Structure formats: C-alpha cells, structure tokens
Length: 458
Image (cartoon, rainbow, N blue to C red; front, top):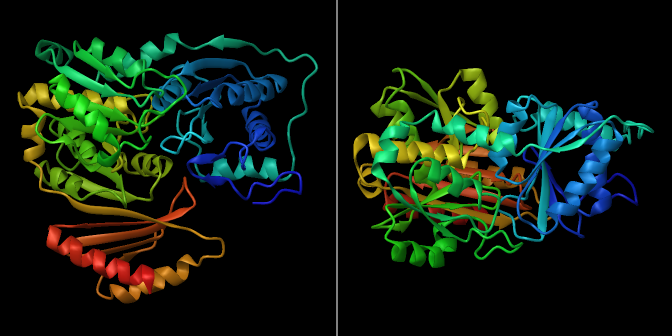
C-alpha cells in the first residue's frame, strides 16, 4: 500500500492479524503514528488498554500510541509486559473501548506490530480493519484536543481477573492435589511473569526457563520442536511432569513430555479439546482453521461433536465460533480458544489449564494421553512471495496436480482427498506463501509432498 512519497506502507504486512513490519524498514515511527492516529480516531475518547511483549521497540511504540490516544481524549490502561490473551481479556473485563497489543508474535526481534482489539475483546474483524485503513488513507484523523480529559493508569489488577477466569474453568482441587512439576519456556517474552503466576495458582511446582524478559530471544521465537532443542535438554534435566513452550506474546503453546521431549504444536489443541468435550453435550460444535490437523476430527468423533473449518487467523476462527455457537475452537499452531474465558481467543493459560485438568481428571501422564491420539503425519513448508508473483497461477498448478480432490477457496486453496489434504495460501504475517499437507500415513504424506514439489517447481 502506498500513501504518498513520505509514507510508503508497501513493506508492511497488513491483514486480519493487524499491522506488522520491520523496525526502521517499513514500520518506523512515522508509519506507526499513522496507524496510532487512525486507531485513536476510532476509539472516540474511550478507555484503551495497551499491552506489549518484551521487544526493545515496545516501550517507544507504546509511548507513541499513548500520545496519539491522549491527544484525542482517550484514557489509557497500561498493562506493561503481558500475554496477548491477557490484554484481550482486560479489554472485556474493564469494559474498555478497545485495546492494542504491541507484539509481532513469532516474528524475529527486528519486527514489531500492532494488534487491534475491539470493545468485545476480539481482534478487529475485516470491516473494522477496513474502517481503520479508510481513516489512514484519507488522513481523516480526529484533531488533537487542547484540553483533553484523559489519564494514564495501570490495569494490573485486571491481570489477576484473567487468571481467575481460567481457574474457574478447571477442577482446581484435583489439579492442586497432583502438585504437578511444570517446566515453562517463555522465550523471554510476554508470558515470563503471568504464566508462572498462573501455574503457582494451580498448585504446581514451576521450573522457569527463559523467563527473563531482557529484550532478547534466547531461542528462535516460533516454538517449533526444531527451535526447542536446547530447551528440550533443560526440560529432560528438570524431571518435570510436563513442559510448556510459548511464543513471545504467549498466545501459542507447545508441549514437552518426559518420553518425547518437544512435540508437534498440532497436538496442543486436540488434547485441550478432549478435556472440553468430555463435559460437553453430544452434537457440540468446534471450529478450527483449514490448516489444522484432522486429529481434532478424531477427538470430536469420540464425543459425537462436529468440527467446522474456518479461514486461517484468530479473528476468522472466533467469528465462525460466534456464528456456530461453538463450545471450543483454535488453530493448529498451538492456539487454544475457550469462549467462556474473557480473552475469547488463542490463550496459553487456557491451553495449560485444560491439559493439566485432563491429566488430573483422568489420572494419566501426558505421555499416556499423547499415545492415545493417532500418529500425526504433517509437513509445513513456506516459500518466498516475490512481488508480482501470481498465486492464481500456482493454484491452477495444484488443481491440475490433484484433479480428484475436493476444493475449497475459502482461504487460498484447500484440496482434500480421502486420506490427505493440502492447503496453499499467502501468510497473514510474513511475505511468504505456505503449503501445509497432512496424510493418514507417512507413506501417503511423502507421496503427497512429491506432488506438492512438482506443483511448486514446475
């Protein structure tokens, strides 16, 4: 997107996930101020909640946001270093006009982002994002006030309210009796304080690892098993019952088990789902995105539940959950969504609570619970998205390469055969396109990947 010679936003990722870019290379102060003023205009002098992760650019971006909002007459509830789901929960609990989380999630340290939150505590939907961009494109900002009646205060007391809302969703007595020994790798990010605090409220013995938010990420920020190799060694050494790894803004959750170490992020959601469905009515609905493992369909089938697939992106999953009155939802990247928690979005506290509750209620180790799930055979690949690259031509190649597949164009291109599926789509958060494939066996997966390679390289 190009606004003028002075403001060039073409290097930014603008999507349902907010706006993000590299500091001093697209997402500088001038660009950030445009979005801050547009957001302030939409808030119409209401109270706004601001949270951030541990990136060094976070404090100055928060001050910039604060200035824009105060100038427009909005008061601020500043949370400081908190997980994204906590910021969302506080917006709802404090009955604020809206909120912003300053975090580029799993992107490297040189990135940062604004994640815009509506008064309901949801990320901005498509219409709200379009309104924000209309103000920005037209420079239709509310004028600065000479005597704004606005204040800056702390919303720290609401953090405890978020924790209590998750505690209310589990059998606290049973979990406390287990006295689980729990390992936490917060990657020096936004979960460094809140997650250990939450676990101690559950009666757990907590082993903190990478829980010092000193402005560095001691491992790659995306919590994949490959990125967690060094943490895995520390987990084994700790002799913990279970381990949890987070991304920098703590809305994604990956598990460590005593036998397997770091396991696929795709296993987080079906384990949490099992806990929810065990106490839900038959016929309940669950929403996951198109890129999520069909392990969730397996779990749903055990309890007579129905799985509905949405577009990728938390806002899209939540929108579908609301429409379908779903009892649970999430994304395969380790994002667990419980609609009865005020964050109503991907929430690591929720994921941790439901999985520990499952272990306590069924009196089983995490390894035993994982062993009861079918084996997962999935590959996630990404490729650069050069300017001028035609995704439509790529989609046509896949359609020709998988001529018997069922087709969905809800979000990019999703192709489904009896024992496999492939999803091709541009990323919401990086200048790449993703190809994700899953099959019922490793042999089927390898055959599928050969066909994928042929489509991408031809």
